[in-house]
Each structure stands twice: as C-alpha cells, then as structure tokens.
Amino acid sequence: MISEEQVRHVANLARLGLTDEEVERMGGQLGAILESIEKIQELDLDNVPPTANPLSLTNVFRPDEPKPELDRDEALASAPAPEDDLFSVPRID
Amino acid sequence: MAETKEKQTYQAVIGLEFHVHLATRTKMFCGCRVTYGDPPNTHTCPVCLGHPGALPVLNEKAIELGAMAGIALNCEVADHAVFARKNYFYPDLPKGYQISQFDEPICVGGHIDVPTSDGTVRVGITRLHLEEDAAKNVHVGESGRMHGSTGSLIDFNRGGTPLMEIVTEPDIPTPEAARATANQLKAILQAIGVSEADMEKGQLRCDANVSIRNLDGSFGTKTELKNMNSFRFVEKGIAAELERQREIIEERGRIEQATMHYDPNKDEVYSLRSKEEAHDYRYFPEPDLLPLELSREWIEDKKNRLPELPAEMKKRFVESYGLSDYDAGVLTADRDLAAFYEEVAENADPKQSANWISGDLRALLNEEGIEISDSKVGPKHMIELISLVETDTVSRSAARTVLEHVFESGDAPSSIVERDGLAQTGGDELDGVVEAVIADNPDEAERVRGGDKKVVGFLVGQIMKATRGNADGGQARERLLEKLGS
Image 1: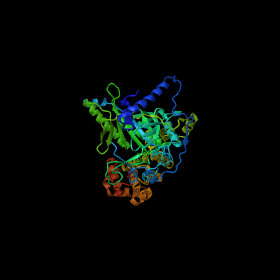
Image 2 (image 1 turned 45 degrees about the vertical axis):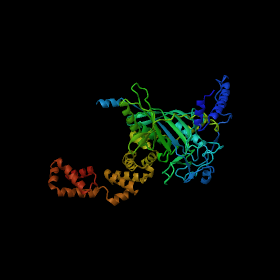
Image 3 (image 1 turned 90 degrees about the horizontal axis):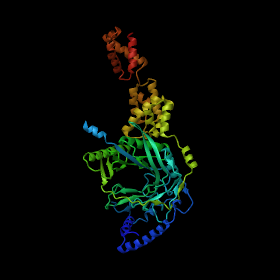
Image 4 (image 1 turned 180 degrees about the vertical axis):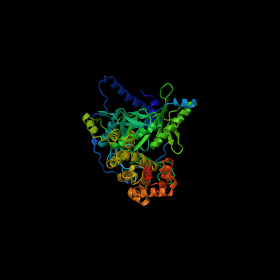
C-alpha cells in the first residue's frame, strides 16, 4: 500500500494540488497499481532484461536537415501573455 | 613557517562538468535550426515547444558527434545506449522533463592528458552523455526595456539544442590544472569538429565540484561551483572556493553542501541557496525514443574518420619541426593558432616561426584578449617579418616594433619598415657611421688601437646612438675593431 505522505509527495513533485478526498482516492488507485506490479514480481525474471519499449526497433534517426519551423506569431499564439516576442512566465524562485 | 606547512597539507579535490553544444545544423529531436543571436522564438516547432502529442526523433549527426567526442576522449562507446526522462519543472523546459541519458549513456570511462606547469596530469572521464539544452531565460532588464512585473521571459530558440555533458573524475589537483583541463578539452573538441566550443556563445559551459581532502584521506564535503563563463574564471573561481573552504576548516567549522557562484568583479564566491532542495528527478527510460545499438563497425568507422588530435599534433610538431615540448604544446592548444603556425613554418624557419608566434604574437593576442582569427596579422605578415630579420634588414628588436604595428594596422611589415625608417643600418651606411664615430672620438680610438678594450663598449654605444638603435650591436663592434686594426 501507499501512504498518504507518499501520495502528497508525488502530487507535489507533479505540482498537483489534491484535496484530502482526492489524496485518499489516489492512494487507493496508486496502491492497486503497485499491487499489480508486485504480482509480476512474483515471477522469476532474473534472466529477462528490463524492457523499456515493446518495439524491437533500434537506431531510428532523422538526418541533420532543417525542417519548416513555426512563425513567431504562431509559436506565441498559445502563450497567455507574450511580451516582446518572448514567452512571459511568473517569477521563478 | 608553521602556517605554510599547515597549508601544504590541504589537498584540493576538483572534478569538472562540461556542457557542450554539438555542431549540428538542427536541434536534437526536431528539425529546427540551431542558431546564435537570431531574434527570439524564430526557430521553434511543436516538438521543442513541448506541445502535447509532439514526438521527438533523434538527430543522427548528434549521435555521431557524441561518439566521436567519446572516442577522442579515450572513452568506451557503448554498444547499447538509452535516453531517459529527467523530470523537473522549470519554465525553460516546456515538457516538464529533459530528455537526457541516465544509466546507459553513450560513452563511459575515458581520460585526457593535461599539460600543467607541474607536468602532465591524467584526468579521468567518468561519462559522456547526450541530452537537449533548455530554452533561454531572458531575465527582466536584459531585454533592454523597463518591465513592471517580476517575471521571466523565455526564448525557445536554444531549447532542444543538442547538448553533450562530459563529467570528469575528481582527479584535478589545482585550480590551474582545472583551467588547463578545460583548455585541453576545448582544443580536442574543436580539433575533431564536434563543437565550436565558444564560451561566449554558450557553446561550452563549465561547472566544478570542489572539496578539500580530509586528513584521513577521505573526500571532504563538496560544493558545486556554477556558471564560470571563462577559463580564467574557472581557475579563479575554484581558487576562491578552495580558500573559503580552507578558512572554514581552520576555524573548525563545517562545510555545507551548496551551489556556489563566482563573482569575477569581487573575486569572491557566494552561495545561491544555502539550503538545497533534494533533487528527485525520477529518471525513467524515454518511451518516445528507441534504444541505440551501435555496432563495432560503426564505432570503428567513426574512429577512422577522426582528424588529428591535439596530442598527436603536438608530437608531430616536436618531431617534424624540431620544436620544444612547450612551444609545441602552446601552439597546438589552439587549433587556429596551430594552423597559422603551419602555414608560416612552410615558408620560414620553423623554430623562428615558433618563437615569434608562441612568444611575441601570442603576447599581443593575450593583451588584446582576441583570437588569432580576429587578428589583423596573417601568416604572410609573419613570413615577411621573419625574412626581414633573417636578411638583417631589421634588427630583432626593431622587428618587434614592426609586429606591433602590423598587429594594429594589418599593413605589410616591409612598408612599415620603410615608413618608420626602421631598417637596420648596415653595409656602407654602417661603415660611414663607424668612421664618423672614430673621427669624433680620436682619444678613445687611439686607446683601442693600442689594445685597450675597455673603451670598445663606449664607441659601440656611440655607433648605436648615431643609428638610433637600427644597427646590429655585434656587427657594429666587428666593423669598429676591423677599422682600428685590433
């Protein structure tokens, strides 16, 4: 199981503000996921390499050639408060 | 004395971490151009802006350059490498994670041999990995306008630039050796064309981990020194941090783990945040990218395509031009200077060329703080100057003056000699001066004729004075003694 403290820690890392009710609900859901993982751990997997990707492809590259870029206005269109052609963000501490 | 003795027992432990822009045309995971100094936010796309659903695709050239750098640094290129997500929130990182490498980097375990005044130091390379650079925070005020709020402004042109991180072992014994390590690394990366490594453009950045070894030999608490923006400041910053740590130890205080900044104006270090939040990056394999499988043949091919490395070039300079280790080291530490030298040495005496370039010319460059490529002195100037000295047209000291003028104006040495009347007084002209001096100083001349050598110096002095220093002293003396039959 996962403790309330762990849920709050993970939520904080993800910058999520959870209500107490949500912490409890998430704790239950995350706990269920962890339990499923634990079930897999019952298998003897010593000789199985960790697999990060189900595809058997490797070395997928693109050549170092420029592709069309966004216009500046297009790029800034999704910014709520552009200033001087820059993305403006709140103060960083 | 006691203090000096005590000081000597302090042993610095220094490791460096470099971030290097790779010399690609486009970014790491998208086809946006890598540029410097372009208007902000003119080279972006959904991938480097972190738009939802956009997928990264690896730049093949970046992988090649990373592997070549690793080979040049005597690393082992991994046959299997994986990209990983490093998760943290910062406005210059729009996805909320940086694509980097974690436990399976492209290169591990190399070394570079670094020349220092105490001999060669072998600095181990722990690892080399590839990642993407963050965007640029244009701090309020830097954008050149007044700004009411206290926010940050972001330019995403740099975001996603191919970046190589190189971490050394803590093998570096002194601040001077740290600077030399940075220099050597830069020379290697430039020589193989992996990066332009221009610190002013932010293509090469250097952080240092600094500690003082405990008396029992174990490592002391280390601090991280960030953002030293020139090699000189790398040396001075580390020296200042070591001094700070030494004072704390002598006062029996405790060194706190911290991130320090160096202020070159005050020559002091200061702590950015006294209390560091423990990082929790939650690395995991990047699911949007596939693993790299680099074959032995592929790696061999990159190895074969490496151009001459600075260490090899240095050896060649010693062997084929007969230079001292020192001169060869100085000349090959700077790729452009080495090329300049080779062009001169093809057409002039190689040793004289080395003396002029590693000595006088380099002193002028250092004084002005410019690179050879920005200098008005070209190889043809140097060749002409050396030939003017060899043919006794100008004295060595006058040639120095000529070089200074060439350095300022870019004019041809011979025209400067003519313009400023710097030609050495020789031949018939010198004979005339010698005769005049003898006539003006009959008593001294007579004493020399009688075998008294004590006044020779006085007469030579008179000759030099009459030629305003444009005669060769030895030659003047020779002519004088000849004429006085002594």
